[in-house]
Length: 264
Image 1 (cartoon, helix red, strand yellow):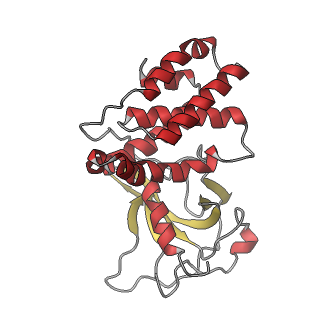
Image 2 (cartoon, one colour):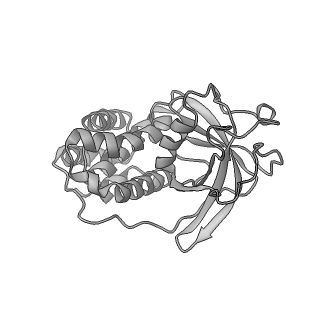
């Protein structure tokens, strides 16, 4: 049984494409960490991916079948890229049982379930080179406002413009101040300053991987388009960088730092 065969049987191409792009990009950046202990690989490589996809995997408002398919896809892709996380594998094995019992996928999936289980529990083969990456694209446009969920809280960001180079096209965003219990409304963002204040002058990031709307991981949600009320902030001072170049997985740590101990 091959990884592609398993993924094809799940019949969720948009979800799998997004998840695969997340993992391929992140594994490429953390390739040198892949030779560490299982605990190190879990902390440095697997956990940041889980942090993003928990927005779907633990969403009670999402139907069980979608969550089951996502668990199997995640375990398969983690294995494909040379890792295995015991809790991810265990969740995927339970999901296979649920999918078989509900008979929501093809008869071929049920027939191949033992082989899928064996693959996920077999020793993974670490990659020897960086996984190939697709040219960056984004469905976001200037003046879009998005909500980005992180660890159960929601943060709003304004798309300032699109940056384009030989690697592709990425949105440049600036965060509004504030942490919200639900995706914020336009009214809540009116007249709101940029995050960070005097402590972090510019909460601006060019983010590769900030691609899909709707986001299959449910982490990024569109609040509104063609919005005229961007975060209130001062222009960059001479010699000050315009924005930080990052990716969607790394952005999570930047957000943790940006909103830490500020009351936002």
